[in-house]
Length: 449
Ligand SMILES: Cc1cc2nc3c(=O)[nH]c(=O)nc-3n(C[C@H](O)[C@H](O)[C@H](O)COP(=O)(O)O)c2cc1C
Ligand code: SF4
Image (cartoon, rainbow, N blue to C red):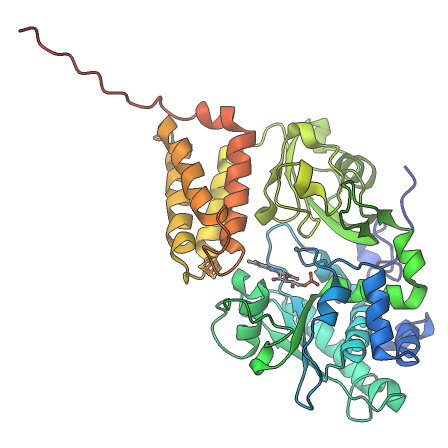
C-alpha cells in the first residue's frame, strides 16, 4: 500500500519509519526557514471570522476524543465584551495507549504554537494556557523553550501577533498538570488551570460561554490546533481531499490526516500519520510491520480504552469517526489502538482497565465512584476463578448504570468505563464463562409426609 504523504509529521527528522535516534526538536529558526509561521501571516491577512469559516468549512473534527468540529465550537463563543477570552490547549494525554500529541510537542512544537496563534486570532482570544500532563517532564521543558523562542521571534507578546503585524496581542503560558487523568476532561482541565482540584463541572454552561475564570474559553486538543493551521496554510479543498465522507446518509465526514499511535502486539509500535478511514488491518500490516511473531489478531482497543474494544472479526474496521456506529464501540476516540494477539487474556485486560478507571474516578458522582469499584472487585473475583456466572450479569448491570443513561454522571469517564468493560465482556464472553463457576441454583428436597 502507498503510504500517504506526511503533513503533521513532515518536518520530523528521520520520518516516522526512520531511525528514532535521528529525531530532534525543530527550533524556531529552522521552522521559519522551512515555511513556518506563513499560515499565521495568511490568517492575519484575513478577517478573524473568515478564518473560523475556513476551519468550519473544512470540518476539522476534534482530535482529542469526541470528534466535535473545531470551527463549529469556535463559532459558539460568547460575543466580545472587552473582557478576557481564553484558549485552553489540552495536552493532558493521559488516555492509556495514547501518545500522539507528545510526538508533536517533542519534535515540532512550533507547528502547535502556530496553530495556537491562529486559533487566538480567529476567535479573538488574548490568553492561551497550554496544559501539559505532569508526567511529560521533558516535553514541558521542550515546549517552554519553544514558547520562549516564539516570544523572542515576535509571535506572542505585547507588540501584537507576528512582530506587530496585527495589533492583537496574545500571551501564551505553559501550565503543568500533576498526574490525574481527569484533568484531561475539558472542565476538569479548566479547574486545574485555575489551581483547584480537577473536578469536572456540570454543563451547561459550556466553556465557550463560561470557562476559565468565568470567561469565554475554547478548549482544543494539541493535534486539532496543528490540523487547523494546515487548513489555513493549504486550503479547505486540499484538506477535504484526504480522508473519507461519512458511511451513513447525512453523517459528518472524517477528513484530513490523523496521527495514530499504535501499541501492543505489533512489530513496529509507534505514531503513524494516516488518512482517516484507513483500515485497522492496513495500519497494523502496512505501517506497523504486521502482528508480532506472526501471531493472529485477537482484538484492539479502538482509540483509547474509553472507546471499548474491536473484536477478532473487526480487524478491517475503518479508522474514521463513524466507527462507533457499526462496530459496537463508543467511537474513534484518539485513534490510538492497542493491539492484542491471540495469546492475550481478555479477562486480565478488562481487570486492568477497570483498575485504571477506579483509580482515576474523581468521586463526585455516585454511579462512577461506586460502580468503578464494584466492577474492579467483580473482575478480580472472576480472574481468580472465584466468580460465578451471575457475576457476568452483575458486571453488565453495573456498567449499564454508569453509562447507558445520559446525565447520570457529570463527565464521560464513567461512560468510558462502561464501554471498555461492556465491549470486552460481550465480545469475549466465552473467555469469561470459562473462568466462572456455574451459578449456584439451590435445590430444595421436600421430605415426604
Ligand atoms: C475522562 C476524560 C479524559 C479526557 N482526556 C483528554 C486528553 O487527555 N486530551 C484531550 O485532548 N482531550 C481529552 N478529553 C476530551 C476533552 O474533554 C475535550 O473534548 C477535548 O479536549 C476537546 O478538544 P478537541 O475538540 O480539539 O478534540 C477527555 C475527556 C474525558 C471525558
Ligand atoms: S463521572 Fe466519574 S470522573 Fe466524571 S465527574 Fe463523575 S465521578 Fe468524576
